Image (cartoon, rainbow, N blue to C red; front, side):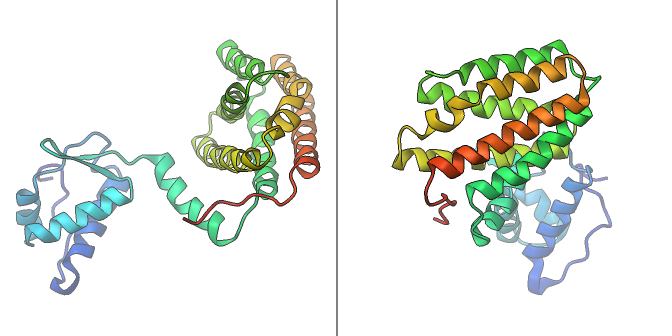
Length: 249
């Protein structure tokens, strides 16, 4: 391995050199040869390693930066970041926009993930997990201001996904939650009271989820999640007319 790069993994075609440099660096990052936090060699050294020009290397690095695989820090160098949430968000946002996915569709998929999360969590949940869920649920109490409702709802749902200890489930849920909040904010922009008519009305259901998890009662936890999401979707249908979608702009 030379400068952190795996030698012999690259075969250059001059007609698409930048693309090939990009593919090789991307592959080495994704398989872990270039770990998060690694400072890549300079553009000059990379150009020598790949036997290409520095502008070719610069083009490849810019593309990797756009993919959130590296971060170009001017005056310091280029570092591997491989931000999972941004990688997933970039790909999934395109799907959501292309398919015109609305808020209800987001909630329907989220339901399955939350059910799986509590199923995985039963018997393994900690006092710290329960405390995070309770604290977030308290912020969603009836009468809370819009900011507390927004942040509390996002925190509660992310804490609910986190109890699964499953990185993929957590990442997928995180994207869906952020998208749900974005779409709900758009609905609230048109109808300011919508937060209180939806998020502020589900305190009992959130408490039921927490108590079922506290009691390590798997079936009750699953029923509580299904009850929570079903009522949430019913409130969305009742209180939001045209379902908001992500703006492609």
